[in-house]
Length: 72
Image (tube, rainbow, N blue to C red; front, side):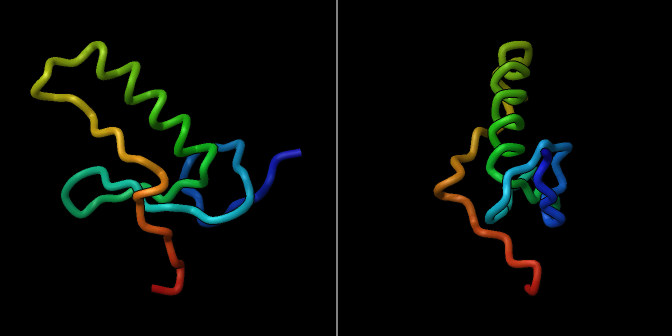
């Protein structure tokens, strides 16, 4: 059964618990649960293999990213 995590903007399946802010550049962010975060990092690692050094995606670490507070 899939967990509903209404603050996560990833595609799921989600895990319950906190969500964190992943910077994407400019004024944009992704708000992701831990499972969606891991899938995004895996995608970025694969994509970086295809991109030149000047266009690499960052690989932020969950533990050092800001916890998202929907009330802010």
